[in-house]
Image 1 (spheres, each protein chain N blue to C red):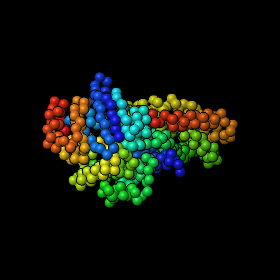
Image 2: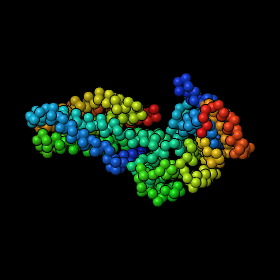
Image 3: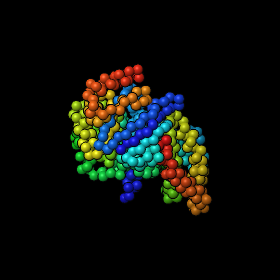
Image 4: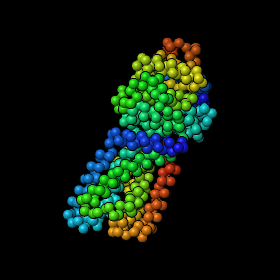
Length: 226
Length: 237
């Protein structure tokens, strides 16, 4: 393993280990997801057809709202005991820290999304088994984009007093292209269309992921040092 | 090791540091004294490249620390007020994290050795959440022991340490100096904090009031000098 990969890996290892022990984010996010599910059901009524039609949008709205909570807290661990300063002082390419943080956030978001999808499928009576493969592709691409930009903005706002307000204000507008693509692709997948028929959305999603990750890698050092 | 020329730091119209110039050679140590608000921590943060000065030049280990802070950081070890530890990780896991991140050798034997040095080997697998402030301070020192620093910057390092911890730190810093390392310590502790110093610098009102060799001065001389120079510069700590 290269020194760069070891540094990214140790950040991921540290974040997952701390999360596994404290369970601060996972517990809150799972509870929040269940609440969202109930709220959507109350808002749209008991009509299953209506709920199923709205499911792609609700699903990604749920992911983004959960992301606002989970990603926004991802740098809180660095604030305690001034670990942020320790990260700044660590020699070497700081983008490895971003990569480790991003990977940790992807793991956390994926875990929450899987639970949310299972709950949606169960409560809205949608059999997701036959579309699990294409849905997983959309899920992975959508989560990378959400986590890439979320990790960057979480770092940017971590040291700001009004971070709870600033984080969603920064994150949500940038999520629009991702939301358009992921909702359209999820809709196509759930209606049984092959994924390649919506390849323009898939391409948009892949390009947005690439752009967001590259921007994160290139700018993280300046954000950490700001 | 350090060449500071006319360093200054202002926050808006308020000058925190003004015209600070000094040099520190390898194998030499400097104790920075001053009342609260004199600018000691700000000076240390500038030397650590954590804070950019508003004016002046700074060379650390032959590197322009303002232009190439990342290069300078490779030679710097910092023990600040906060200990840079993760509460939900054990002492050993914390050391592993920081050592790998710094590109060092994180073999269990080496990490264990560092913990033994600071007398934390018995609690190596305990979560840091259960540690006292003094134990966290020791863990921070173990992180520095594992690093490859040639310049140590320590902000009130003796605070929170018991007698054994102070003695260990004193001996560690003397050994570090003997091996060619340079040390800057900010402190209020007479004579513990000043005990390892070759030179004493006294800050007052953001200015370097005196920079003298300890060879010419006894503890009482330093105390008298400190009292006379810092009178009128706020509350002494």
